[in-house]
Length: 506
Image (tube, rainbow, N blue to C red; front, side):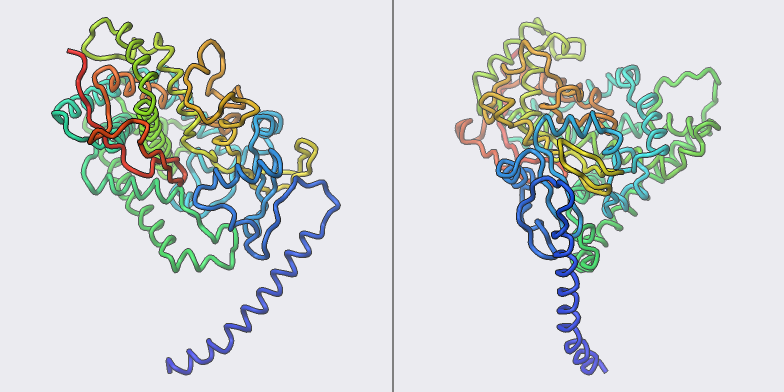
């Protein structure tokens, strides 16, 4: 039975492939012959795959190369999906400000959709009433200045704990990236879930989750090749991680519900000691939000906090320390500022951070050179629009290369150089108003958790350089540090940041 089936399949398969190739090539030629509209410049593309082969291992760099050749707006074809790539501050302003509402939606991507309960989170949900309501809930109840400040003790306790761990290393080599990842995970866990969840299993789940969010699914761009995602195991792994994370979050929700039953509700609205799950569950009981905050929506919101608040934050600090080791002058200048402000205090607290202008400049310079999400998160046009003189069709995906914009020589002097001084005595900020510097995006879909992320960055960095001199092991010079990168959704160092920390303040 099996041999005859194999013979039939082997006979029909080549014919099927030839017919498919003929049909797709005909469709491709038909689409490329339409010149009635003024499209943005496009690089030459291949049948079926379009420009997929040109993305490379580091798409932010490959796309920068394309835009250097063709201009700040380039229309590429990924499979059968048109994708507009913007790589200048002017183009970003047009998309994120002038035509923000038209470009405020998200494309439906299979992996984020599976991981976030059908895109019920803030980051990946399509633009519309649901997204507006859940974002409003997050901004008002989870990420307001008052709420962020209320978790100050968590950030300080976890940061001081990391500093103690380094101190106990007795001058031996430590994996700073691993410590920073543990720091951000612990902070998010305590803020969102009420306590830390340590252990290999939980950490492995987070690693797999963030890795999958940055994975490329061929089926999103060439539908008839979706079988490749199944064959590679990508689809199965995504479903497995989604199920494991769901089981974990279900146990967290049940734990909070049971805790709520066991305590007396005083009814005075006092939320002291509440974590974000407590707050969301309280909001769910409110009739005005109950239809929006279904159980899956709460879980999706919590997943967003882990996706946006752990990996991106720890990598930003790791890149900053890497550059400080490479540039001893900057390190010494930063240490002097912190020492002068600290006045011999045992640790830096959040009260001290506002005065540290050079610290803020150092972090800005890192975010410029190592944008945490180099291509931000893809958008999708909801209607036809004329953009910088070009016709953009509805349904076009949009990639904003924030990494390339941060290195644009027309906007930045010596753009490849690490020079925090460029951010002194000017008003350029990362809050989405200066389009040459948009590490957190801008417009309606800009990151709502900027304040929460920045204060972790500043506090951890200030205490690290205040307490220790950081050097590479085995007498390797700072300028020899490997600065190679790997790209998923987040820009990571390719190799671990191994350092030797020497206390320099008593």
